[in-house]
Length: 333
Image 1: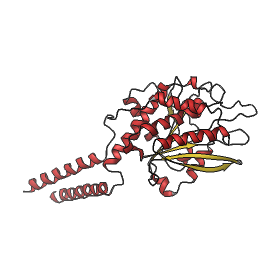
Image 2: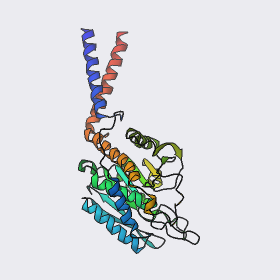
Image 3: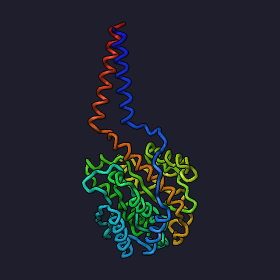
Image 4: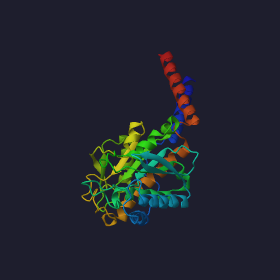
């Protein structure tokens, strides 16, 4: 009778553990989503931004580009808002795209949409094809092709005033710094991942691991890249750290990763940063990886989120059964 009870108890425990593993995916499975990201479309968005010319903070060109970006996001069904702030007496604007304006999306996808202005001995970055436009182009294509059931997980943020550091007394990453400063505790705690795209369009793109990024998040993305066969682009070696728009998130305790080409290409912060230095293929490689990343997260959270009451009950049941078994074993000695 005792043996039957023990067998029954162990059978029940195993069943509970199986359920627990089912609702807590371990990310050991191979990817099942086949990406549809279109690099040619993304490249078109890159060229459209460059057609406005240089786009430093406060410029008419940047304002026109901002309107174009907002119009495209809205045409894809996203809700767009502008986050206005002033820095060094210049009116700056972050662009925020949300699928459901009432939801606290756990994933923030970011890029800067301004270009570096010229300085006293600095040519600036001209039209900023790679340094600025490439990340924005990728996010516009993702906004268009992500499955609708995945979109509520994502908030798209395009930062202003990232690239003027060292010119006229400006510091770097002002748009992201302001954005994070405006997050309340609830919103800050709801963000599980921030992924930054910066210089992701080069023809010979190589993305090593940026050293200050959150290691677990970074490894997850690199694992997806490996599954897709993109090891030649997502290099498994470390560079950096880099001062970039992911830093304010890290400082606020939010997991963040910077996808950035390092070493910087020779045309970085020069007038030679033009669309011919970029390729649709490079954009598609990174876009594929991010698409799979977002869709996988949606699939996992659709089972049970980690803070689900059901998952909590299951965990409590497992703990109670284990305690009973341990106590029973001690009594039988």
